Image (cartoon, rainbow, N blue to C red; front, side):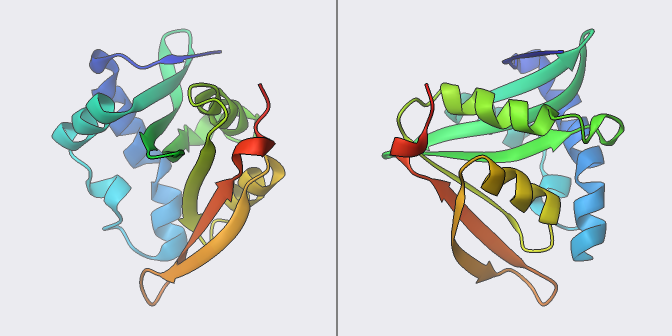
Length: 154
């Protein structure tokens, strides 16, 4: 498996994988209208132009992805996805650490739902600290985490 910068040609496959990967999240939060499931190709192309998208590829098949974008002194990460058939193999952690390297010595921000215990565990294990919760719906809250700039390893 390799982690590489995604190419524009990869975006349809990444979007398809995203919709597959977020099915479990939609079930967890009982909401199939969450933005990762309704995102369009045009929208992911805008993400590509305004930040970075990495892909985890295994023999030219994209099995994971993550996005990063710098705003001010913080790099925000999102859409950290792994094909359900490849989960629990450390790919998500490798993607997270790989995207951090594109934004050295910055503060990092990421969020997930309060029901996503696996995501929260991965982020906290890698130095992310919860700093706020916001109610998204009657079903769940968003949990916002950050990793201080001085906690980053080069």
